[in-house]
Length: 67
Image (cartoon, rainbow, N blue to C red; front, top):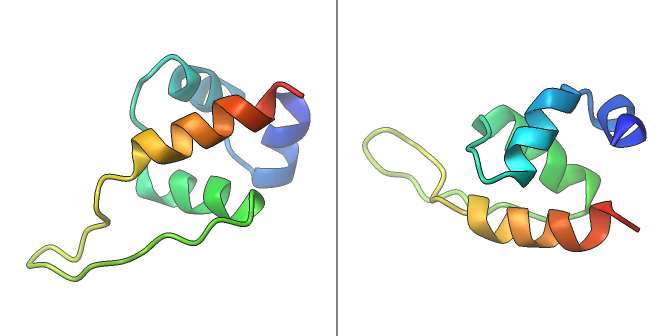
């Protein structure tokens, strides 16, 4: 977890809480997805927000972070 925090710049507490099922900001989701080589699809709407892909990133993160 420490190494992931150093490589991505995401706070360790934020990463831990994300693993526990809490939400992460879109900036941190972008950093985490980029670190794992994932592309996030952006769909423009009135607020120009990302579609909620947190669940998929969480599943990928849980699978690969503990190796």
